[in-house]
Amino acid sequence: MELTDADLIARVLVDDDQHAFGELVRRHQSSVRGLLRQLTRTDVSLADDLAQETFIRVYKNIRSFRGEARFSTWLYRIAYNCFREDARKRKELVGVDEELLQAEHDPQTVDPGLKHDLMHALNLLPLHERTAVVLCCQNGLSHDEAARVLDIPLGTVKTNVLRGREKLKRTLAAWGPN
Amino acid sequence: MNAMIDDEILDRQLREATPYIDDDGFTARVMANLPVAQREPQWLRAMILLGLAILGSGIAYLLSGGFVREGVIQLSNFPIWLLLVFAFGCGLVVGAFAIIFAIRQTPEVRDLARLRF
Image (cartoon, rainbow over all chains, first blue to last red; front, side, top):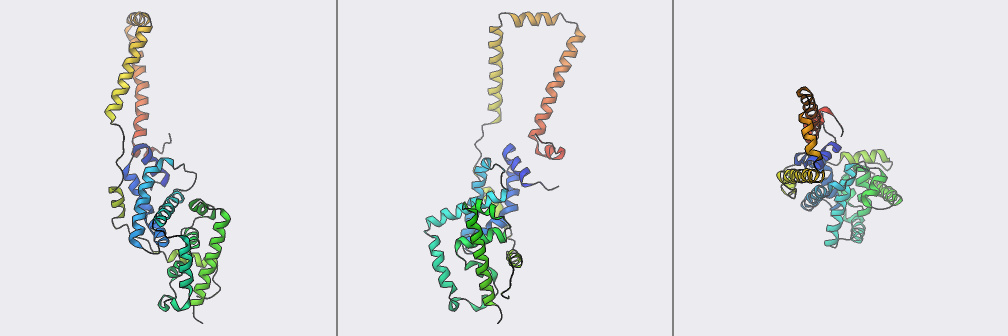
């Protein structure tokens, strides 16, 4: 019988069971590292460093997890905060993404070899839309859960997902055969 | 890809385009970097509890004005079978608490029994 996340968290809280925490890390490492790779534009090394920092923060603060939201939602929120703090340190502000988006949307700069690469299309989105799309469409979070993770209003999440999806569709359609 | 991609198809393709990332030693690196728990040693907790119990008993004895001593003398006049029943009852109660505490402290037993405390 496989233990639930709640069972594992209880073991960490009551018995300080590091094996249980290791199982939580094993379970969620792929989705957290995947999210951070999307946010860091596939900078694997940076994403893994941030993922490691995320899990260490989770361990330190696990007593503050109240179980009101899913564990994965709480985890993504910490991962997103780690990314934001790192981005602030590196002075990578959201505005930079907008400039990159403008540059990368220029048809002449798009690599024709990547026409059907959905992940590349995703990377063309500005940070706020990319994050919302990755959380809601890729990782299956509800709009409400994504709003908690990103600490922004629900309406903003919906708008970002809608705009992100539309841009992805347009990009993919433009890449398609004529 | 055509222009008429609906949300469901797009979401499915996004999910399928995301490969599972192999652990590849990641969990081990995280575990190696976890902070060491700052918990007081178990023997210290036991000694503090024992000390408090002895201190409390001593204070209670002094404040009782001989009441406890008289109680013990009266208890010694009870028939032996009654003392045995009393001791057995005390043992059962203490044993029951010990078992409950042991279950709470043993995750494997707790999961096996699916008990919620």
